[in-house]
Image 1 (tube, protein in one colour):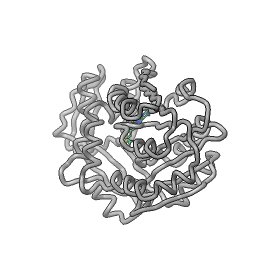
Image 2 (cartoon, helix red, strand yellow):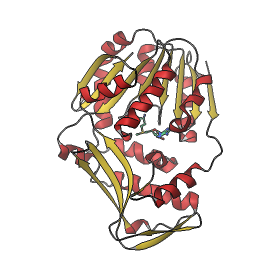
Image 3 (cartoon, helix red, strand yellow):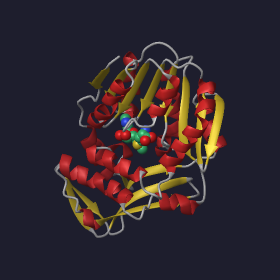
Image 4 (cartoon, helix red, strand yellow):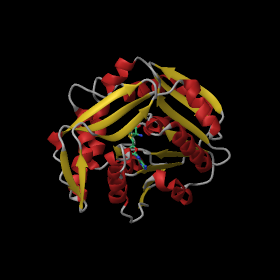
Length: 313
Ligand SMILES: C[S@@+](CC[C@H](N)C(=O)[O-])C[C@H]1O[C@@H](n2cnc3c(N)ncnc32)[C@H](O)[C@@H]1O
């Protein structure tokens, strides 16, 4: 049925403005959505293949084992919508089973998304594939004109919801509720609270791929904003904070130093941190409370080896 790609990223200087705002804050921080330039997308795929980062493989096993139950609980679906679809691998399993007429995928990394989504229209000739290059945090609603009528399923796997603080997660889930419309459903995968040593290991892989992913953010700022970060003077530092229930990912300055970026000078004290990501972990009941606040009703839930998939209507 074909493939269409539309770039909905408004021509604004978001990266520059957000980064300068984040570097002026205390503590310094940069939103995790900026990890995903082309190199960042490739590094994220490599993280998923690391032995310590079992999250992706566990979710795939869960989906494979429970797919008949999930399909039965879902009923007919006309359109699957996947925000932050990345390499578009996970949705294939749903396409094989649910046979929707339409797939709408969105990602802030527009070019890699288009490259990943286009083959889907060849592999599923009856499927209409729409790829939208967009920042859904900024303007999820811009996708509405591209959504066909019928029963919609918002699919949000990979524990991407964990990158949002609980109040932000609830607000995003409420926007998904609007996007799905009255008969719509939400199938969402998230990482469960578990042994902190296992969580710690997942974000500190021995091959250093997560470290390279984190440091690539600075390389991106050097490439795109003409910054002069010396990557050897910052250390990837990730740990599980059990009080907050989240992995915290930082880049810690190994020296007192000044960096220059977009015509400004930014000072780092020795040991000062640039915070780059939170990855919240939930109990099943904690998560369903957040989804309920957002207007969703839990229909079914599956858990496997520390990972959960929940279905909402
Ligand atoms: C952790 S990856 C998950 C990819 C895929 N859904 C999976 O489960 O394997 C997060 C994806 O969301 C995208 N993303 C992050 N923030 C975004 C935003 N604000 N708007 C659109 N896409 C975003 C990233 O580019 C990346 O492809």
